[in-house]
Each structure stands twice: as C-alpha cells, then as structure tokens.
Length: 160
Image (cartoon, rainbow, N blue to C red):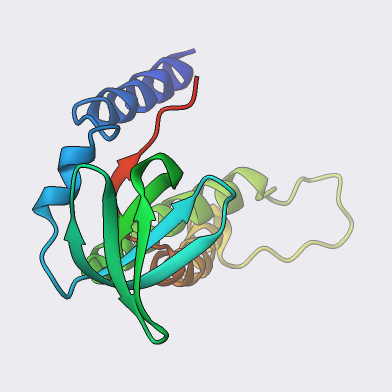
C-alpha cells in the first residue's frame, strides 16, 4: 500500500509539472531562434524536419535540403526543438534506475538453500545476487538513457 501511494504521488507530480506550461500556445514558437533544428508534425502525422526560419500569426517557416518550406498554423499539430543536450543526464538517470530495479528484482527472486535440498550451491548470498542484478540493470538503464529522446516540445495542439 505504501509503495502504491508513493507511486501515485510521483506520477501526480509529473503530471502537475507537465501542466505548468501552456503547450497549446502558438506564441511559444516566438522563443525559437533562426537556425535551430526543429521537427513539425502536421495534422496528417507527417514529420517535417529542418532549421527554423521564422514564425508569424498564420504560419511557421523552416529550411530543408529542398528549400524553404512554410506550413500554415491550422495544419501544424506538434513542433519540437531537436536538441540532445540532456543525453548525459538521461544516461545517469537510466543507470541509477536500472541498477535499483535490477538489484531489487534479483534480490527478490533469490532463494537461499533449504535443508531439504540434496544439492545446493549458494556462495554469494542474496547480497551478491543483488549486486549482480544491479550491474546488469545499470548497463540496461544506461543504454535506455542514451537512446531516450530529449527533444523539447514547443507547441502541441490540444485535441479534444
């Protein structure tokens, strides 16, 4: 029960922090600087990537290899700033979470020898098993952290 309550509180905080900024505001695009890499997802879920050129009340313009493109505001569903500046942070967080989860899972699954067993070898004990699980979880968490995208959501249309 205590763990469930803790999980609900953590998830609630994440949701509350998400709601602090108005992602549906077109004015958020005004914070972009010319030359920044962006990705635009249109209403047909097609992704357009390029470098930001400008924004007006009616449209956003960006540069692709094929030339400058403009998408009208009513056709834009999502705009993301394509930056990877949090890769180290994500790797460290993934490593820590992976190590903790790995240690807990392996320690919980570890069963020591019982007197009724005819043959049992258990030289490292539950702590050693948890250590091995922590190392395996650390490696897996680090890989997930490196691959986790850290693109900043600038604009998203609220669909009701």
